[in-house]
Image (cartoon, rainbow, N blue to C red; front, side, top):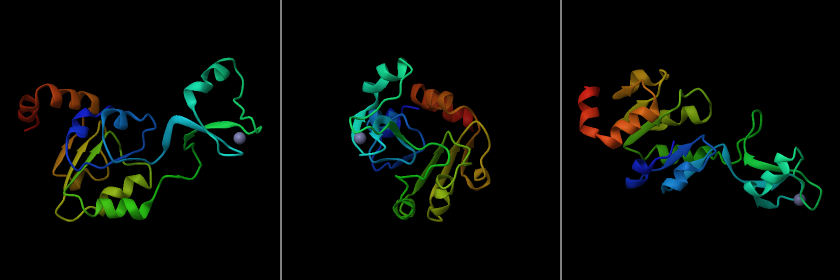
Amino acid sequence: MQSPMLASWDNVTVVTQNVDDYHQCAGSSPVYTVHGNHIHSSCQACGEQVITEGLFFIIEDGEIPYCACGGVYKPNITFFGEMLPEYNGTEFVKVMSEVNLVLVLGTSLAVYPTASLPEYRPWNARLVVINRDPTPLNHEAQLVINEDLCEVMEKLTSNPWSFHLQAL
Ligand SMILES: [Zn+2]
């Protein structure tokens, strides 16, 4: 989900499991991409970084993209079973401990360790959950909207007062 609305707010830290860089494209900063991003790929042997799009013509021909050193290029995303290279639990807990609002957007909070981050918010921080399915933190949230996130954000950005009245 691209988030120009979030990017327009001050002091917003985004922690995302998405690998698409949409938050950065929308202007959000800082953005922690816990599962990496697919914009760059790296050689698994020497670590050289390249733009993934530059490898598409090789992949589309059904070939494996190799580095000059003989190593294989892999997108800088975390595949199932791999470690999370960008997950700095201590830093995330520190960030979370200083917030006054947590927005849980478009996640069922089922994938750890990211799913546990809202638990580190201060006792008086507000919690808002917008997700199609219920989450384990719904009962702690001050506002829960169990609808499709894209539809909710579209309503919020197009006519926030109308949406507010519907939510009540
Ligand atoms: Zn290499």
